Image (cartoon, rainbow, N blue to C red; front, top):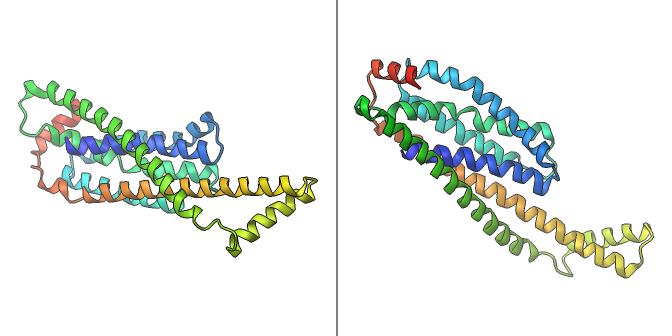
Length: 248
């Protein structure tokens, strides 16, 4: 059940984070952000049958460990490639990598959940799996959203400490923006006010970007810690695995 909970948290949490990032920071429309997620669903459609074939031939516990490892690696790759200059192709690729390993967690966890359970109780186990996955998704979205907000505020506070008169980098940026606006026909006072506003906007953008990176990095740590845990579960007999694969 723990693995099902984490699967729901990772799947639903990342499904919310990436389109939110694309819309709030890169200016994507809801439709465009949704299109960036389409590749992940396509990859899941391909990987599910492959995982279904492998789960009856390979130790499901090893498959789960591989799934956690590949998901952690994908999330780390995502965290290291998020940027304000990211294009649509990169965003779609990041989502595709996120979902590539989830099938190797989803199917083995379903199979292992039925080990030692009488056939007449299969419906209860199936219902509990779905319930725990949904709860994990809801809690994951709430936790990640809260972390994102708090990290954004903390990062903005830290970055704002560098925006003071006398800081060469800050003064150069402020004067450069102000001069550009004056060259466009704006008076000096209004240009300076606009320059301060634009610098503040840049600080806020960078603070939110860093928050996304930190939240995804935290997810990397959580998923990586789960890699060795499937080994403590009891391996089902091959006949049992084949039966569960046929049923699900």
